[in-house]
Length: 200
Image (spheres, one colour):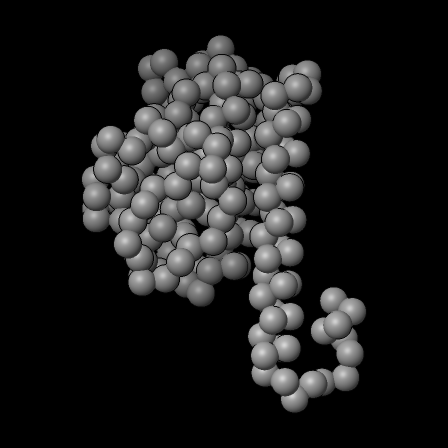
């Protein structure tokens, strides 16, 4: 940052190098933040309060809509007003990770649907996209730390490889299960199933 604030240099190489340094520093910061979050999820005692899930999803929806070039791309469907016993910050992290992945790994002109509904046995948060999809053999491994599906892309997608590991640990702490269905080149559906015993 200090070097970037110095008087402009005519050296394109220097400017390019400084930009790369900044990008890698930011990537390292994201990586450290995610590792610290994972460590806390594994070691900190669980907190439980009644979390207003519809209000939380409205916040996440508004935040992500403002960040996309097409705000109408994200579709929020709330068919239940049920709340959930849990940790709001942890749930926010899990839901945001799933939505961010859906946006990153699907074409910008395709919709991403997030929903909250209740079945006979569960409260279910779902993110559905029409992206590149995941091969069936890869699905059991996608929640491993640093595991990234190898797909040939025209553009490299940034990330720490820890997002779904964080989702997995958050759900474990909330007695929940992640269910993934996907077809290559047709899209993916990530569903978080919370037991009705956590309804509040």
